[in-house]
Image (cartoon, rainbow, N blue to C red; front, side, top):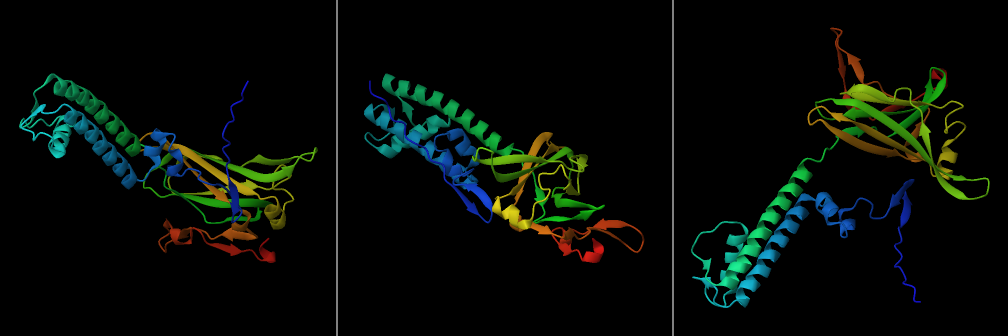
Length: 299
């Protein structure tokens, strides 16, 4: 009995700036074997190009079929590819100017097949376009860095998030995970994921900013770690945000990653909230990413 050899599919992973990156991950060109995801992820210019090429290709096929029927289209020049091509375009799009029309049973049969294909093509194109337009997208900004500094006497991992739209994200939930390399008791290498408990992991409405804080106590996976150990174990802080967009009533998702080089120790974020001389409060987003070092007297 012969055994069939399966072609191996190797996935390449490389580390760049502390980030584990899968080569080709989420790239539109990696979906050639999944056409539906391809048309959803390809840029708009690529989507229009694919639709246009498919449209022209289908009409070329039907034009050749009409040419095989000989003189089967009235008022079309016999043997003229372009006359038969543009007749195919009129039939496929249900235009029907009436200047050219099928005059044989063969041409009527091909025209019927093309009309059915046109109905399916319009339905598929409408569905794909709607799917692209209706995909919910979150416009959430995350601070460029995270900080670790004492807060109420406890070391606290902090980062910021801000809603960039002038609406609210309802029932917003934030989940934070620590990914790092570990070695089991048996000496096996493993990439382990740890949940990081937050001071506040959800909010009823997320409209402005959110300072996310994780206490580094005895129960924290970050307890006892140093900047050097974070780099050595290839740690990553992965942030996942989800919520309901009040405008379109659809679930939004966004994510961000912090690597050890983006975690500032003994720093804290500059306050965004300011007061006017009249006592009113306002938020200045110019300092959204800014931090300041903490002196020993402030700890």
